[in-house]
Image (cartoon, rainbow over the protein chains, first blue to last red):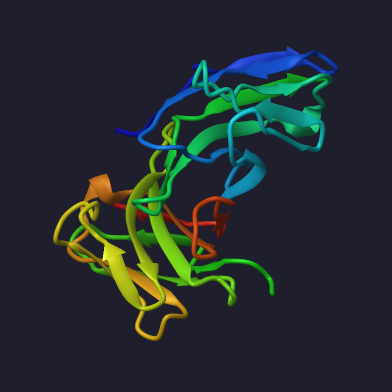
Length: 112
Length: 114
C-alpha cells in the first residue's frame, strides 16, 4: 500500500540554521512526491514537488530530491528564518486511486 | 480566480445537530477532494469527485457523512447527528485531472462539536 513516514517533531532551530526534515515512503507504482506547509489556522500550501526519480523540487530556498533507491524525499533549507515556522507535510500521489497520502507532519519552530 | 474557498471558516455546533460545509474549487479544476485533519495528524482522505461524479467514497467515516457536487462546480459535505469525535478541520482541495501536480487546498472549516 501507500504510506508516508516523516521524522517526528517538534524541530526547534535558531535563525540561519540548516534544516533537514526526513521523509520516506512506500508506494505502489511511481508516485509524485510533495512537500506542503501549513501555517496556524490555515489550509495546506504546496511548497514543492517532484514527479519522477532524481527530480529536485525547489521553492523559497527549500529543496527536496526524489530518491527512488532509498524511497526518500527529505526536505532541506540552508538557512531558516523565523517566518518558516510552520508544520510541514510530506505527501505522495497515487495516480490510480486519484488521491494524495500525507505524513503526520513535522512542526518547525525557528527562534530569532 | 481566488483559489479554493470554504465556508464557513469556523462552526460550533451542539452534539446531535446536522452541519453542512461548502467548498468552491478553482473553476478550471475538475477534481474536488475532501479531507479531514485532526490535531497533530496529517490530512485524512474522505472522498473525491471528478466533475459531478463521486469516484471514491469508501473513506467517508460513517453513513452520517455525505458529500455532493451537483453541477460539477461547488461541493457540500454534510455531517448528520454530529458527535464530539467529529471535531476536526475539514479541508477541501481541487486539482486538474491528475494528482501529478498536487492539489490546491482551501483554508478549511474548523468544526467544534460541544
